[in-house]
Image (cartoon, rainbow, N blue to C red; front, side):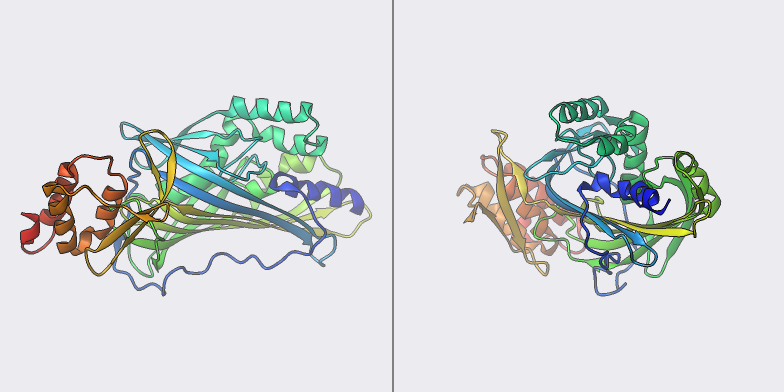
Length: 412
């Protein structure tokens, strides 16, 4: 029975991409991204702009071993994606497209089956309300099977997750805790928001909702990165902690247990989500989702066996991607002085220069005089598509008029 149990639990790493015989490493959750909790209370809201784009690099890692360290398994995969967001009224549609390497995974932050990925529909509060594209994922799996690119054991693991219900569950388990759980919250240092929820035990291959106790906490300030989405270039580190209730977790895994020999006598699940997001929009710059779980199995005439499993998803978002009128994308870097209004924009290594019109000169002068305008001025220049900067000048004047104190002469 010990051998069959190893085979049963080794399937839990299949969806992550392959197994190796190296022992599990240390995969503790992401540390606090700032200098401790030294930020005044912040009001968080979901406000993704239409047309938001980001390059996204991901690492998915699954490791498992028995409690005594024996029979270790490891699956690791990498992905290079592009996030694309479009608006439909207050709703947002988001999807990932392959922009380099990809990997097969039917669950997680960005599921992928041969390049086929779901499109998520978010309401105005950032809650996932719909998922599209599951039929394409199923067809991609069938084509991979026909080409002999996937083994039967992997098919058995992946196929049950390619339903609208399962994809909606995995989307809720990730994106609702990145967006909707925080939108509308005003949090201060040391303040913990406690509650409960029903979340799938994804690392255990089950999408049956499991009751968890939750904690939300503002961890401190955090660097945003080289490019930002919102005019307010301010990021914070947030953390979600979830602990599965034992009875609910056992019920969620009952179907899995019934298919195997022996009895599942114990199960635990701890989930941590570490985020770096922009305060004004909840645009993510870093997302780390980690699930730590264990299963204890008993077979007739055999000692109890406990398998420990770690599933970690780590994604970094780079917003220095600006769509051009022709639909192509260029590598754009926006630099600004957080202490003042100075900024510079580089596209493909060359500094972007605005045309020498009166409105463009006035726009640059106003930007330099408004300390809080550096980030938005950089974004406006990066998105400039010709013309005399009249619209850009109007935008930065609005920012100046909305601040405290007298409007600088350069902005009048």
